[in-house]
Amino acid sequence: MYNNSIVPRKFVQFVIRNIEKILCKGFRKVLNGFKRNRLSELNKTVENLNFLEQMVNTVENRFQDVNTEYKCTKLYEESGLLVSSKTVQIGEKMKPSRSNNDVVLKPVSACIKMISLIDLFTNVLTSGELLNDMKTHYSELLKETNVVSNFVQCNLWKSKVFNYDDKTVFPLILFFDDYELGNALGSRAGKNKLGAVYVSLPSLPPHITSKLSNIFLFALFYSNDRKLFGNNIFSKLIEELQYLQDNGILVLNETVYFKVGLIFGDNLGVHGIFGFTESFSCTYSCRFCRVDKNRMHTMTTQDDDLMRSINSYNHDVLVNNVTETGIKENCI
Image: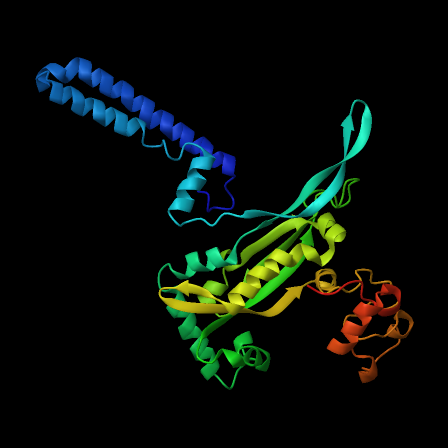
């Protein structure tokens, strides 16, 4: 029931508690009555008494390991069915607090919630034949030369895995976006706005990759914290991605590597993580070229002299003037 997204978590515990009452406590009454009325037919012996008592205790304790959400979570983790999120501190921020009728600023920890891709992929790929299915589908895509239907067939990906020789390497696609939890038009809009980072595996077979459940949540954080700490908020995520790229994970006695192939997002999200201005009314709001906003309104053809490059990007980061360059900080 926890896996069903339309069932609230509190309802799951409601069902468990009521089943426990019906089966456990109700069964105790039935067996107690059975002991009183039928025990003479079973020869009242210590063995029979102990046997019945053991039956009652077994039924009563059947839900002992799952009668709270904490116990359920712990059981799933120990069984390898759940990879829980980690709380990662990224810094401290000052928060107003009332003390003795005065408002004072107190330091509080700023944290993100992060799900380890190392643990997640190890858990997912060791179950069933998924790893073999991915390798088979990957090989079939590389053999197809007439139709390009997947990122692994592109020259960009081939250049990224050129130095991996015969190692097993799968691409990762990251997606980043902000979303509002509350009323986007209310007076408190933005206070509970969250940033989310998702990961997908394009090398999964089509019948698997098309399911939303196979788009994995990587991290959650407050959007206001990203404004405060900048792209440093992604530092722990980058460390994990770097580990997957350099060291890989051990799956069924085979080392499997993962490498970021693409980063997706809407205009605002992509501008944010790549260090570009998030104001589309500023002088240089384009992430592809350095055309100013006045010329942008009448421009119909590409000007190659204005196209951004790695060198020009690094230069603009050093200039550190978003008004003149359209870049506010280094990318993640």
